Each structure stands twice: as C-alpha cells, then as structure tokens.
Amino acid sequence: MELGFVGLGRMGSRMATRLVDAGHDLVVHDVDAEAVEALVALGATAAGSAEQVADRAEVVLTSLPTPAIVLDVVLGPDGLAQGGAVRRVVELSTTGTRTARRIAGELCSRGVTAIDAPVSGGTSGAEKGTLAVMASAPAADFAALQPVLSVLGKVFHVGMEPGLGQAMKLVNNYLSAAALATTSEAMAVGAKAGLDPRTMLDVLNAGSGRNSATQDKFPRSVLPGSFDFGFATGLMEKDLGLFAEEAANLRVPTWVGSVVHQMWRQARDQLGADSDFTSIARLVEEWAGVEVRAAGRDVP
Image (cartoon, rainbow, N blue to C red; front, side):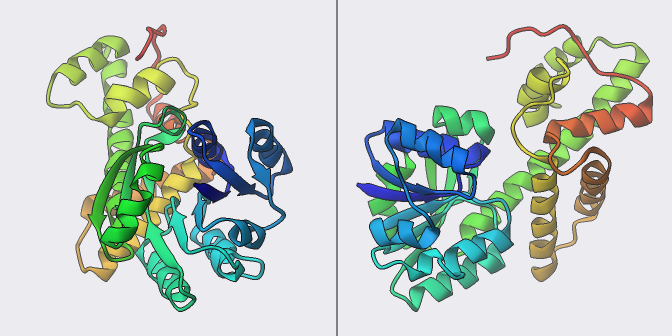
C-alpha cells in the first residue's frame, strides 16, 4: 500500500522508518529537510508539502507536536484536505477531543475519513514497534488500516466516534505524568533518608508501589542521570492541559490532576519545554537537596 506520512520528528521518523521497512511505499513531508532526506535514503519519496503527499497517497498518517500544527497541516493552505488522492487521514498525534472532532467534521465534508489513533510508548516503542495504538474509527476503516497500524505496535479499537482515541490517550498520559511526578518525590524522600535508590526500585517493583516510572523511566533515565527517555517536558505539560480541558468539559473534578499539572508547568518553565520529561526528577532533587543516582545496571 502506498502511504503518506507527515511529521518526521522523534516519534514520526521512527514510525515512518518501520513502515518503509515493512515494505510500504511511503511519501513523506516535514519542515526539517534533513529528516526528509533520512527517510528518502531508506527508500521513501519526498513531497514538498502536505498537499503533495495527499495528491499521491490514499492513506496519510501524521505525527505532529501540537493541535495548532495539526490543524494547519490537515486543514490549512497546502494541507492534506486539499489533496486529490487522500481518502483516509490517520492522526497519530495528541490533539485533544475537540480538535479531533473538528478535523473529522471538516474532512468528512470533503469525502475523507479521519482516523483518530494517538500512540503511547515513547521513542523506544516507536523504534521497536511496541507502541500502544488507540484507534477510534468506523469498523470498516479500522479493519482496512489495522495491518498498517500493527506495524507500529499493539492496536486497540477504542470506539467509532472521533475523539475517543484522544480521550484514551489523555487518560493514559495523565496517569503517566502523575506516576513520574509522585515517584520523583518518593525516591527523593527515600534517598535523603539513606536508602539506596536501586534497592528502592527493586522493592517498589516487587510491591504495590510499582508503576511505569519505577519500572522504566527511573532505571533507564533518572538513576544513570542521562534524562533521555525520549519525550519532551513541554509536550507532557500540553497533554495535561488537554486532559484538564476534557475533565472540565465533562464536569469531572480532578483535585490531584490540578496539582500534577501545576508541577509540570513548573518543570516546563524551569527546565525548558524541550527538556526530557524525566528531568522533572531533577526539579524535585533540587527542591529536596538530594540526588537520586545509582551505577547503571542493564535495563531490558
């Protein structure tokens, strides 16, 4: 199947590479010429705009950082909606439900189906093809695209209405953000009390305190001090803002969520939007006056 792909950043480049390696003819576009050249070297074809991608491919996938950029790439001048061949647009980004529904409505009026399919699993998951893909789409479209999406990871059909994939992703990222923030605090307390950080993780992962931060993020990126897990602090803060908007629209109180969001805003402002999101542990360390480090043990 000839596919289009727009957005070749840290996640998009890895997902696009997997699609090329799986044998798909891929037409790609990104504002970063070097990212495009890297995919062309692997066998993809370059296009000068999103519209040109959509003139070639019936199915176009996008992986973009913010709702505003997604709207521009899909609906703006030279956007995907202007293309003559495109019939399905698969949105792998985190945009929030409102943006997903707007895009679906606009594309539907042009005879194009929007597939709401955000992903989770970081750059490692994108590279290995182990992402969680949360797809919301009509049954026939989901069935047609499942072989393509399966190249990226494990695919879940979370519903048929636009926005349900986004709702699932926001729930997931809220829990991920809360786990990383609270684990940073817990580990700082234990380290300052005199506990060995590696021993703490061993105990936590064998007990009821186990979570995604204790299992993956701390062993891989915090204890070694590398802070290189592959997701930006600014993007996590953005996702928490979208979660807060969704909760408010649904009239669900999120007392804990508001504090978690405040903490991530502070991390973005103090550490920079482009810092790795595991760097929030550095923020807590600074406040606590302790470092949570240990000699690296290989982590699977």
